[in-house]
Length: 301
Image 1 (spheres, rainbow, N blue to C red):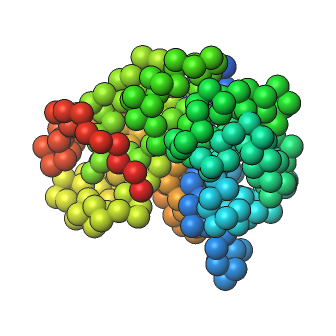
Image 2 (image 1 turned 135 degrees about the horizontal axis):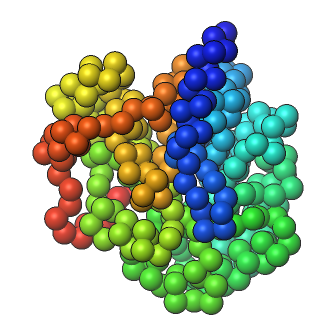
C-alpha cells in the first residue's frame, strides 16, 4: 500500500510529541501496537507484517506480544517483521503464570527471544498471577535482567492487592508496568488501582483500549457522545475511543496498545495521538459511562 510520505511524516511527528517516561528514563509512545490474535492465519501474514512495519515508521515503536498469543505465532510474526529495525523498537512479551518459577521463566524467556529473533526484551511481563510465589518470580525477573536478556520487567492483570503484595517482596518495587484492561466502557481501575500506580510510579499499559473482544464495543461505537465527538474532530468513533484512553496519558503514565492487523487501521490509530478531547466532551463521556464510585473487581479479557 502506498502512502503519501509527507502525510505519514506529519502523523509521526504528532505521535512522537506524546511520550511517557519510565522510572529508568526510557521514553515510550502513548500508543503502541498490540498483537493479540495476530500471526494465526497465514493468509493475513503479509498484511500483518506490513501493518507492524508501518506502525514502527509512524512512531508506534512499542510492540506488545506474549508467548500465549497463538502459542508463539505472534512472536514469530513480529520476529520476521522487525529484522531491519529492532534497535528502534520497544519490545514487550509476557510469560504464562505456570512459567513463573525461576527455572521455567528463564526457559520461557529464551523461547520468546528465539521466536522474536532478538537477544533481549525491553520489557518482560508476568501475564497474570498464578500459584508461584511472587518472591520467586521477582528473583527470576531480576536474574534475567542481570543476564541482559530483559532490560526491565512488569506484570499484567494485577489488581491493587496484587500490587501491594508485589511491593512487599524483595525487589518487587522494580516493577515498572502493569498491563490491564482499560477503555471507556471499563473504567474500574480509576477508583483505586490507577491512583495507586500513579503514586508508586508504575506505568499503565492499557490493553483492548477499543474494547476489542468485549460485548461493549458496539454500544460504545453507537453512543451519541462518541459519534458527536467523532464528527467534531473529523475522526472515526474508534479514534475517539483511543483518544479517550490516552487523554491523561502523560500525567497518569498510560500507554494504549490497540491491535491493528491492517495498515489502514494502524494509520488511524496513529492519527488518534493528535486528537485532544475538550472538557465538554470529557464530561459528556463521564455522563454516558460514569467513573466508578466504588472499588470494582478488575476486568479481564
